[in-house]
Length: 169
Image 1 (cartoon, rainbow, N blue to C red):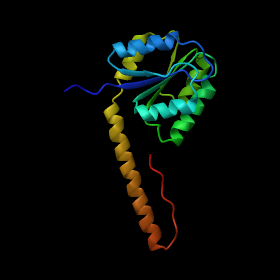
Image 2: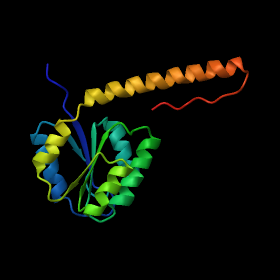
Image 3: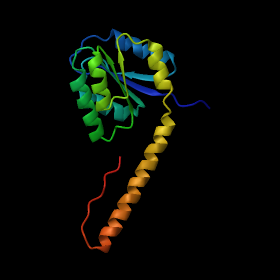
């Protein structure tokens, strides 16, 4: 029985009308044994987040050549966190000025790849992520938060104070 394929969602958010590179990356990731869902051009961020949820992907790649990479990535990250979808690897690629790479990573992008990036670098980056490790960490973290919730409720019941639950991921 083989290992589950890595599921990748590749999206072209915004008004960017160039998708030759995204189609090339999609084909290369498929050739590398990954399952790729390509959304096509002119996708809205809420649609990308909904597709990522519906398809239960491991990786989301945003391909942006229009120069709106900071705004679109921020919008994606905020909405994915709101929908509790922030456990996926987020890759941003396209025409990204060097000064914006750090900004994207600080926002929450796991990696940023420019148009000049060799496809093997992207494939190796994705293949070297231990997705099982992230699943285990998420389960442990949620268990810890539930334990903290129970402790919090117990302590506040002793002192007869109302309390609110801590949100889990």
